[in-house]
Image (tube, rainbow, N blue to C red):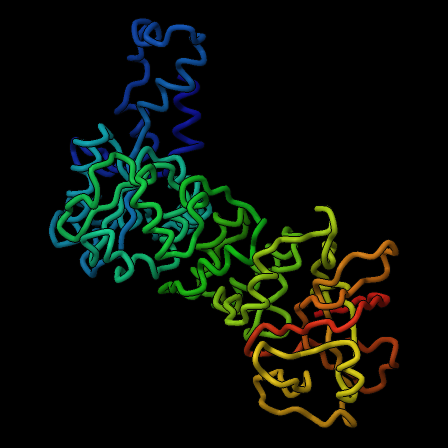
Length: 456
């Protein structure tokens, strides 16, 4: 059957566990085991009002290929691809796998199952590459995602479970439409078949992860809301440094080659793709990391409540009154973006006439004294040229200008003029300085200024 074969090779994982025999099978073996030719006219006739073609493609074939997928924390004795191929069936990891398959068969009538520990031939670089690129879709298309929590036995203790602190489990939480949570001894945390429909489970998950309720139930991947999505991953860790990037590709719908051994370059490549596809100024707002690129999702965390309010408000230029430059891009010189630039090396009285860098309950302080640079060294204004670049200015009728409004706060970058020997002033550019926190300033008066292109 053409439709069955197409789905097997285009939509299901490269290897699955055939639960009745606890056997690892390939896509080719799947074609012979499930025998799609046994779909009868009687089966088709049960779907009254549907065309024959639609009944086969939309219900009968998907029902034959439905599989359960496991989300869990690995233990030392997890069964490998080679273990299942050789028939090795022992250890705590295999017992967990067997319990997962039992639940999948008895409760959800699935004959097929998938687990990341044993259903990927990691000795094949092409299969590993396909698995990482496709994993978000495999979790999305699974009939049920069964989660085994090794430390939590109730909704009240979800926060202690390490499952919520791992990088890969973020997409395993967001992608599936149907999930079922089990505790350490495989006791269900609820009586529902789908915990994403449970009025108690979803708010509990939201409290632990800080992910909005709607995203937990109906998440859509893509580069939009990139800053917010990064904060969901900010506290999560991976064993391999490359997986910090690879585990996010499905969430942001980013395609990139897989190259274990490249180290932190993987996250730099991922960010280059994300910045190129995301047109929200918030993605450029991070602290720590490197001047031109964050080094991990944790760079998007902030304790600056003023900044947090602005970053959550996704104002971009085609939605009413716009903010910032939505046409920034990756170039050979770095990220090119237009900022509203103001000199930082001026007197307090001059700054006070335009900006008030004054947190609530504190006295006014010089912007330079307020900014913390990783080097903990701030050269005198007389020897170094410094600028403050405002990123989320208001749009002006003149596209080459930006507006700042009295009483409003703005997010800014601290910039230092970068000079090379023999270069003229026109060719000099500004280098973003690393700060420990996302920076904000408040405007004391209405202000407008011509924008400048800066390469960060």
